[in-house]
Image (cartoon, rainbow, N blue to C red; front, side, top):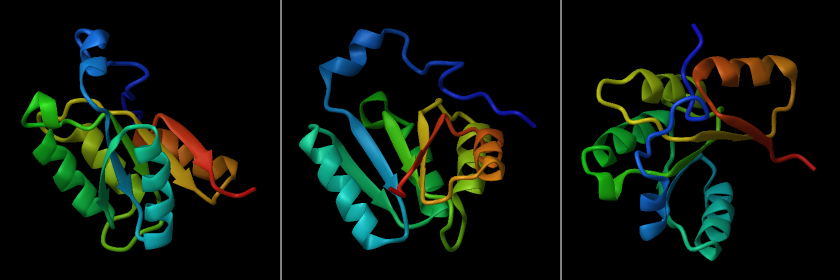
Length: 133
């Protein structure tokens, strides 16, 4: 089943609205060092950052923050290999959940193969960025 991504459906009625407040980013990764590195980059860009150590926690945070426009996430940076709930399943739940407002989800992973890319697209992720050099 192909899921709608933010690229296809924006959650902003007025794009200028998002520039009137600080961007909110959710970092989802079970590795504290990767969380720290991504948080450092995002805060240098002026973003507010929240972290989740697995997909289940991410789904709960996204659903909770979607209740108010001023607390919604503008971006989710999602790892795929995590305990409790992986990034694929979490992305699917975020995309298919009741009352969920679309948010861009970028897969951040060391995996870089066509099967992985296809799975990310099927889960509803908008972009895939590899961490390998």
